[in-house]
Image (cartoon, rainbow, N blue to C red):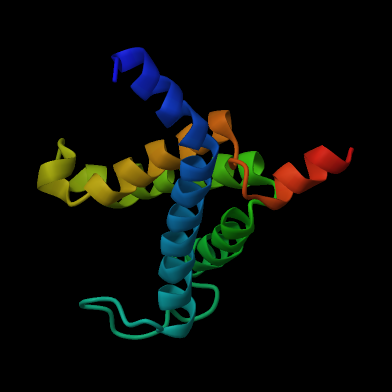
Amino acid sequence: MSSTQIETKLNGFAPIVLSAFRIVFGLLLTIHGTSKLFAWPIAAGAGGAVPAGTWPFWYAGVLELVLGLLLIAGLFTRAAAFVASGEMAFAYFSQHQPTGLWPIENGGELAVLNCFGFFLLVFLGGGSIAVDAVRKRRS
């Protein structure tokens, strides 16, 4: 099989794989939100739910829960991913970067990876298995 044939075959799966990527990222973001808001599942080293209104963690939890659910469903994917990317950039620069220059030394690798993963979804959309895709087909 030539490299062109392999690329053609893989390209056919791209919309479904993009949907899987979006769903996994949305699920992980949702779990971060529920961990902050409801102490479920309990994150390593966490002491329970963040008290309501606590800046910035409670607000981050609300954003993560709502945006994560939108991303799982593939509803308003690009807008939700844009806000999620911004939240992760804020998390990195406010919580991690002040303690060290490089993500490897300041514990911010996850925030950076999430930021760019969500940013990718802003440009690629939600894939073929998404509410957005159904809405687009109907219009």
